[in-house]
Each structure stands twice: as C-alpha cells, then as structure tokens.
Length: 539
Image (tube, rainbow, N blue to C red; front, side, top):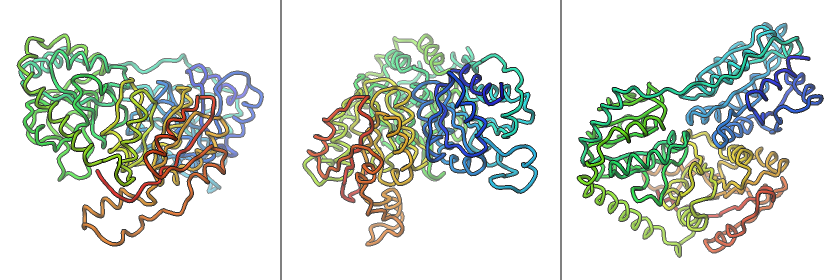
C-alpha cells in the first residue's frame, strides 16, 4: 500500500471527514489512491485554493473538527494565504497539506517550486514542516494535525514531496488531541477578589466562550455578579457568545461609550486583546482596570497591563470564578446594571429612529429588515464589511454558536466559509456578504452547486468598496469622487444563475422580506438574493 493510500487512512483515524482541494500534478498519487480506496475522507473539489482554505476554516469552526485543505505547491499556498490569515485570527483548527515537487526536482529551479515555501506560510501558522523521509510521512501528518488542536489553536502546514507519496510508508502513531490547560488556583482567587470588590463591573463575551460551549457558564457568572454582559465589538467578532434575550445582555461592546468610562472593572472573557486600527485610538475605555480571562498566555498585557489575569480553558475559568465570587455582592450592583441597560435601550431606540424601515433603501435599512425577518435561530456567516455593524445592532441571537464572522479583513472569506459551515452543520446557512466579497470569492459558486450545499447568499450590492469610501470620508470629508472604489456593473444574480444557482434581485425592504420568507430546506441547494441598495453610509 502506498503512502498516499495510508495518508487517507491516517486522516480518517483523526476523524477528518472532508478534505478541501484544488489539485495539481503533485497530488496525482493522492488522486490515484482516491480512485481505488474505500472509505476515508471525502475530497471536496474547489476551483481556487482560497475557497479550499476558507471552506476548511468554516468547517472547522462549525464542526469542532480539524479542517483540512490540500493545496498545490507554492502557487496554491500563495492563493490560500489570505484566508489562512483569517483562520489564524479566529484560532481555527485548519491543517494545510501542500503537495510539492519530488525531492530530485526540489534543489533545481523548476515550475511551481520555491526554496522558501514554508517561510511564506510561517507568519500565518503555529507549526510548519516539510516531510524529509517517506517513512516519516504518517507521523508528520499526525504531528501537523495534532498541532492544530493545541490550545490556543492555530493553523499548521506540512509540505509533502510527490515522490514520498508513492513510497512505502512507516507506521502512523496513535491519535492524541492537544490537552487544555486548567486555571491556576491562585489566579482564580485573585480574580474572584477583584470581582467581589467591583461595584460597576462590565463583562465582554469573547469568541472563546462560544468555541468552548461555555455560554451557560458565562451567564452563570454574570448572574452571580449581577453584571451587564456585552458581546465583543464588530472589529473583534468571530463567534457570537451570549444570548440577546438574556436579561443581562447589554449589546455590542463599544470602548468609547461614555458610560463605560465609569466602570471599575472590565472583564475580557475568552477573547484576545481588542483589535485596533492605530495605537492612537483607544481599544478599551481609558483608565478602567482589566481582568483578562484568556486561553493564550501571551494575550493579557499585550497592550494594557491588567489588574488580574487567568489563563486556562474558558469554561473551566468561568466555572471556577462562579464558585469563587460572593453572590451577596450582586445587589450592590443593581443600580449600575439598571443604568447600563437603560443606556443600551436608549442607544437601540436611537438606531431605530435613524434607520427607518420606510426610508430610502440603504444598506442599514436592508440589514435591519434582515434582522427583523430571520429571528434569533438562523445559522449565519457574516462577511459584509460595512453592512455587518448595522446588522449586528439589530440582530437577535437566541441559539448558541450560530454566528461566524471574520475580523481578519480577508475579503471573500465568507463565500467559502459559508459552504464549509453548511457542510458541517447540514442545515441552511445565511451568508451576508458584500458585492466586493462576491467578486473575490466567485469560485465558491461552483462548489456549492456541485455539492448542492444549503447556502443562501445575501449580497449587499452598493456597487463600490464602501469601507474605502468611509475611510476617505473620515480622512478628508465629503468629496465628489472617491478614486478606485467603483466596482459597479456586475449583475450578481445573473452571475450566480450562470453557475446554476437560483437567484433573485430585490430593490426594497418589502421585496427583501418576501424573498427571505421563502425558506428552502437543506435539500434545495444554494440560493442567492442580490440586495441592491443606495450608496448611503451609516455606521
């Protein structure tokens, strides 16, 4: 049995059900093994490596398994790097297998060879290696997969010479997943004391809360504290981690909200240090002490020195703190909680007044309409740069771990990620994407049609790179022309139809409501709704 055939067996032993692949000649031994093998993972054909990686990422997030993408040499890896960065930012368990030329060819200048392939990928992975001996291939594959499960999770890459796939393999080691770290007892005691002393605490729910299935644990801690809970800001959001119908839910975290400057403790629960666009812009309320709960020991203190930090598995940390804090302190925080909730309700009322459903059909009106129609249970993938924030302001979430987004800026990610999520969850996914995202991710259409994946793409089409327009407005104010932002002229519905996707175009809120009311089942294949909005920008 060749090493390629044993590679398939090894992936199956690790529970890998799907491998996302845009193959080339270096993958021929694997393709030959697929033609004769029985069982093993399904190889899902994509027509661009960026889609392979984003599908692996979406699949990993939604399934809790390892997402595997098999890429072709240096050119394939290069095509996948942007979405590999998205997987890194999200701490997604993505393994990249890169087929490279045979060892006799590698020392020479040849087509699709690079002496620094792993250096190219190194900034976006936690582990990188090239298989050096055919007899070590299965061990190297297992080690690569294992590294994607080590907390804090990061992608990993293994380069595999073509000739090693046809050789006799060694023995695959047993499957061993990375262990999670429990919190230090002294750190929990110190954090509990900080929480007991706080009279105006604020909790921010990070993506790790959803990743570990710890939404209930966070709710338990917040209830014991009597503290308001925000969901991390749009800039940081990867997964939604707190129910919007919970009485302690206070909305999206906004570090520059005036009321938050009055807090006497800011609890960052299961999240990294918030992202910033520049060091001059505050990422957290100035002067407020921080208690940072993280699975990555490098995160607390990355920019702000915290008053306390607990490093360890998010669920275990939250349970330890719930046991450690004194519930009798909660009543003393009731006035603060009421003020924060009143502030949140007033802010919501202002948004509703500003985004009138009877007004001009802007992206904000479209997103409020979507939020009104879909409720809190639908499975969502968000990759609409300037439309995501208006949607999140009105969105309801009552189902755990049902929203996936990217804070990476890797345009086009949502096209393939939604397909990966649909393949993992086997239910219909609503993917809210921008017209620019579609133009980056067109190859995803072929794969969702071929596999009849239940993805409904909601495409917000304003005909331009609205985020760049917004940046220019902040920099220089209103102007008649915004260079290099006009991407209009594409009939997105017609483009989707050409791939075999049932598509429709809407130009108003009522048409959008009607289109969303048609709720195809998971067996009905992909759909697309092109939402044509005006150029009005409201953030």
